[in-house]
Length: 423
Image 1 (spheres, rainbow, N blue to C red):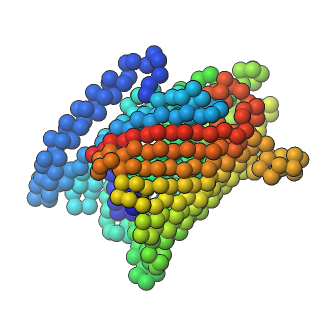
Image 2 (cartoon, helix red, strand yellow):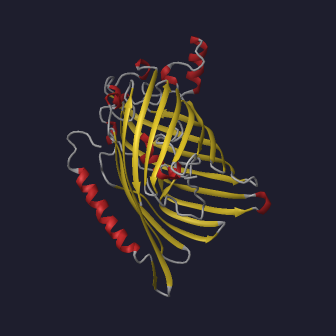
Image 3 (cartoon, rainbow, N blue to C red):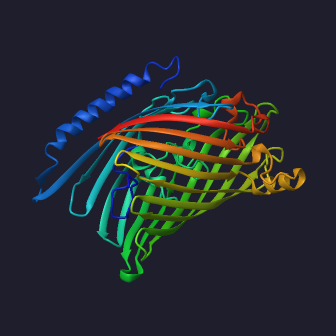
């Protein structure tokens, strides 16, 4: 199987993770930066192991990727201006990792993307870290470190490591990748061999996250002065004695403080959101099959100094089941069913009032997806993907002329094509 597993002792993210009119300047700059770094990587790769200092062989690796996609929807705009078809589904990145001492490893990734209104080819430091591994069961990381939430958050930037173009969006939303991928702070990790009991992989972290507000320009609700005082959490994965079976749980708590304004009503005030997120995970990899399922809830509590701005506390529910297999060396099909309820109580009320089991269209997102992955060679892949969507909960109002989600088309489809080259 092509899917990657991230063990605590391994480097987090060794591999990866268009245009709209009027955005001409950023793209050449990113290409030039990526090309320069690629040349540095190629030159360094020729001497990937070099003795320095007291004779320790320093290793060096460089990897990169370029990805271009196309998205078209039968109705509604999803991720980009997709109803008319959009090529704003582009990614480029390069990363470096080096074992600079016997127990010390460092790494970094430069990344740029264009996803509808997001990214606009602006290059940024995606992740970076220093990793000191004292023992298999105890290590320390510091920097901008990938968040170990669920099974696949750490490989969400690696298109070559999975079958789907879009991971289940109820759990791994692509529009929120920039602040869900990594946190700036520190992490403890370890891998405990339980012999006949399997093994435990644990991660615990504390830090903060940066959220870019520039993409919210034009949204009906404006946010400014956003701060994240803390994010804290952890993940525990049990590799069971049954070969290929992993069970796990993730827990995360964070707080957001910001100023909130609604231009239509002139309401302005301070707002605070406290969130506790948990997710249960199951994965079974056997022969050429991969089966996985995850289910979780996000508990959100709200505070404000303006009663007119205050929203009730809510609980969001999400989950999916997914399967993929390899039928040929060059062909891997995959399917999944994903579900999202942004407000469980509201969806339940809508269900009881309307006699609609799923609630109103804005209170749900059901996503049935199918993918074909073609491995052209060891450095180039092409993917075809289709989605049947029931509900509008996963859509963005600012992409749909600020129309209320409840007024958008309830049943719609998504078609995607994506190609990725990597080294």
